[in-house]
Image: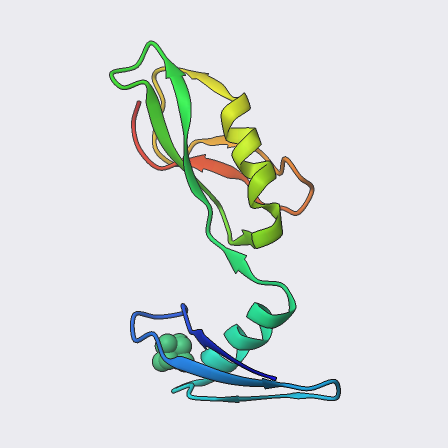
Length: 116
Ligand code: SF4
């Protein structure tokens, strides 16, 4: 089975052709070693940097943008969304404030990316 995926490691966006078999996988189309690593991760356990927003009370705006401190497993996105919906912060908020430290035990925090 062959899968085509775009490498997301840099803006060049190489189109990778990944031949998957039971014994091994071959990867073509990558312009550097990072593309190979990305393809392997994308097949085994795809990850994405998660961004969202969290409710703020008493601030200039009702929401503050947030992101995870590292890429999370794609399958974990629903529970990060639920976490964001469950939180309510009090202004003032500074950028890079950890608002949930390692909530799911994988070493990844939820941090603010702007003022509120
Ligand atoms: S394979 Fe290398 S050059 Fe191509 S998009 Fe990925 S990181 Fe960028």
